[in-house]
Amino acid sequence: MYDLKTLLGGLSVEEFLEKYWQKQPLLVRQAIPGYQCPVTPEEIAGLACEEEVESRLIMEQGGATPWQVEHGPFAEERFTHLPETHWTVLVQEINKHVPEFALLQDSLSFLPNWRLDDVMVSYAPEFGTVGPHADNYDVFMIQGAGHRRWQINREEPGDDDLLPDLPLKIMKNFEVEEEWVLEPGDMLYLPPGVTHYGVALDDCITVSVGYRAPTVGSILSGYFNDLLAQTDVDEFYADPDLKAQPAPGEIALAAREKVRALIRSMPLDDDHIDRWFASFITDVRPGHYVPEPDEELRPKAFKELFKRHRELWRSEYCRYAHFTDAAGVTRLYVAGEEIELHGDGAKVAALLAGRRVQRFKELAPYLEDKELLELLTDLYNMGAVYFPEE
Image 1: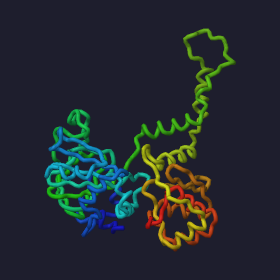
Image 2: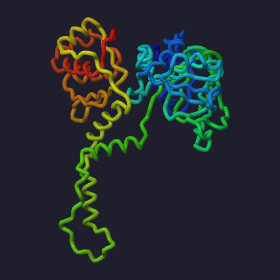
Image 3: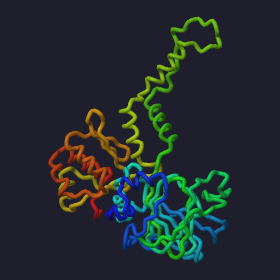
């Protein structure tokens, strides 16, 4: 992990959250002094050729149309037929494939893990860019190699401000409020809605740590869809106690009360909402999966392997979260699954959800607890943790 005080430009966590988080941009010169990017341009291109890696190639010029977007995996030959300038290759979720990027996220551990999205890396030759645009998430952009000029405008663009008929949301007329040139180790934080325009000034690698926020619509629709799945929706409204109605056009009080009671019968209590949200926010996204180990282990074999490897890593393919409810019950959520824990389980939940690397000497006391050892073994067998040499 990097020094947090340096990473935030001398600000305390409280100062950063109060003055900048979701409020205004922050430029930090040499946030990571002497930063050495863990990947080269060639390695980024190599990852973009792999089947299990999500990647894009954006060509402002040199494609069949301006701002052409191609999706990987790419054939190796694709990168030998690109123009010298004006293109960018992006690799999403590189934290799944390069451990150094997974650990980079821990440097920002003062932010909740459930808000974390992924680490993206982009490579561009001179003039490479994805155009002026705004994102709906918070992002920390670290200059990994080369130099990139960033220009910003704090006004979020509307649909009328965008170029029509493009696969990207690019502004038609971008007015510059501020601009900076970032060197390796510099970092720029941008809150949602700030329009930004980054252009490579030479061979350039940018590392982006993004923080997502679910839409209100996705929260509400997800929750009520979950309720509907637990309800007999084919049961019909019934009124065997119907009384004669003098005004046929009126919705009588008795009918309104029935409908009120029906809606109020749904589990809208705090505990149910909390548990649903924790499962929802850690669930594996559609089209994604958690790779399982080649061979399942029994608890005794797991403990022996853990002792041999000395470290246990959390999988980047699944999300972890936990909370303790009003009754004092700790609930750990892994890839959408709820696990109820008691006693020392609360400490184990905090360790698992709070750190990417667990060391044997720190977890050894808990491995004497049969239930906690079984928990860790189950997590290994579902692919939620792994030994580093695997």
